[in-house]
Length: 293
Ligand code: MN9
Image 1 (cartoon, rainbow, N blue to C red):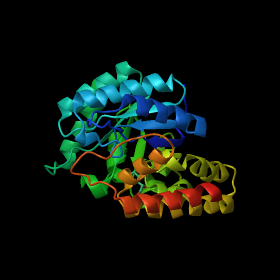
Image 2: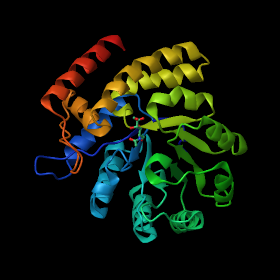
Image 3: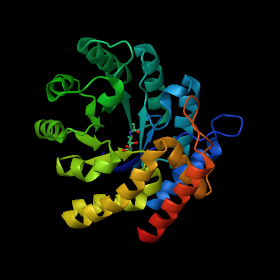
Image 4: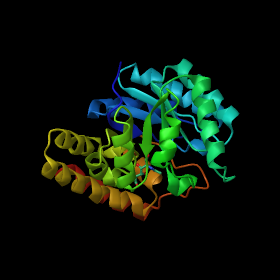
């Protein structure tokens, strides 16, 4: 059984010039990341433009990732939807497609009550019956998973952990301390070392798509007990992440992957496109990063 820990890339969705999902580029990206030392993949999450994709597109993307991965690394399928029924449909598909775990953001937009959100999670976990990671991302979802709510959720045996995309490391520490058997994934890449220091078991991130070798060093140095070395590499990563955040995270990462010979196309509208000037700045920054890393 694979261990739920390490560095996982939150995969982006590549499109061809007609705007259709480009499965060839997706496969190439998966193999490229495996060669770079990635531990796993988070599929169709925020970074993968989950809510700009159809149900069928999400299923097809997961199938392609599982096929390219060939059972080698972790595959976590994000199956979150506003509707329990749609999430269940994606969850059952993920299980049959061979994912190692599923994960979901809390249902959003309608400001569901905490009870409704908990019920959504219980229905999903008990309906699919496989390891589950609660995706906690209060800045986007409007719902913040507290240590107390996590305690309640842990009544369900399928809770395998939390994808913690927040910067309240006190909360993270409390969750891990109360549930040492759970896997806590740090969600903000620029704060990976902070999350690891508070007890996280690994990280899931968008920028790991282009910064894997550096992030690997942050993680490995921390695990080896060398925080100074880990911080040195976090600084190198953060110089790049600062630039990536300037022009739109996903479009910037796609642009950089273009420099590596993988044409991801733009993000789906209403996401905006990267200008030529921004592209040049990303190229300069990425070249400097490659020399430096
Ligand atoms: O998957 C990502 N979250 C979002 C996690 O994109 C919403 C992060 O990797 C961030 O993109 C990254 C930059 O802020 O930390």
